[in-house]
Amino acid sequence: MGKGKRLHHSFSNTLPFSTLGQCCRIAEKLRKTIEEHDFSPVPRVTVSIGCTAYIHGENWQSFLQRADIALYDAKASGKNMVKMR
Picture 1 (spheres, rainbow, N blue to C red):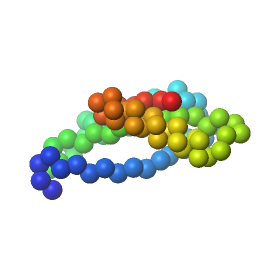
Picture 2: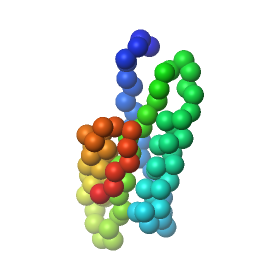
Picture 3: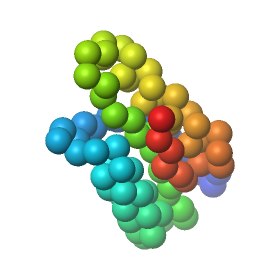
Picture 4: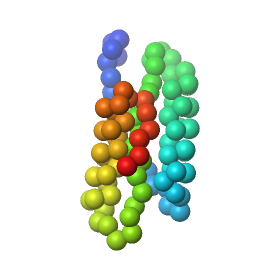
């Protein structure tokens, strides 16, 4: 892979029985761990994370859409961030 090339991968994870605050703290710890890890020969790896909480009774589409918006908020804010919605 040449210098300046970026790979974009997405995945989702659920943390049942956790508050939004707990999820964001876990996400921030993950973000920082990835940022500080040496992935040689890759010069720098960062991650943007969007967090949200399921609202009882909402449909999954709304829930996932809100998480997606939080992710795009993180990317739009300069990347390598955790944002919640």
